[in-house]
Image 1 (spheres, rainbow, N blue to C red):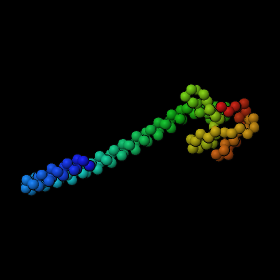
Image 2 (image 1 turned 90 degrees about the vertical axis):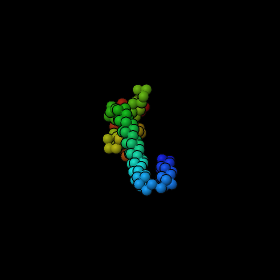
Image 3 (image 1 turned 90 degrees about the horizontal axis):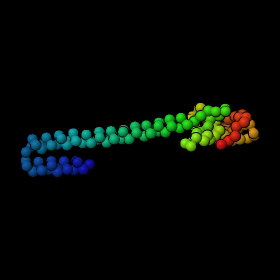
Image 4 (image 1 turned 120 degrees about the vertical axis):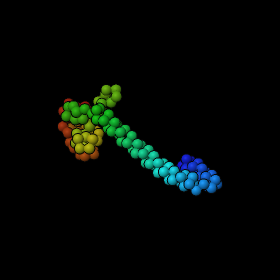
Length: 126
């Protein structure tokens, strides 16, 4: 609040001059200045929150664009084009969580998070 401190010095100088109308005008301006500084701080916080929200949405959209459904399961396409998975269909479709399925037998996979079982013949984990 450096601006307020400087402004208070101006009010002190006006008091020394002894002009009551100048002093009152400066006091009114100081009150407005405080309101503006408070609103400015609130707006800065709102902008920060909105930017964070946009960043979160962009990250989520980017991830969603890289999730592919193939051969009965979801797969995450890495930046180099390699598919990683298989991922749990139930976890992805219910809460957009990418949970890797664990292979139990050559054809059956299970999710350690939700317990879903998937029959995926011919699928090899990557």
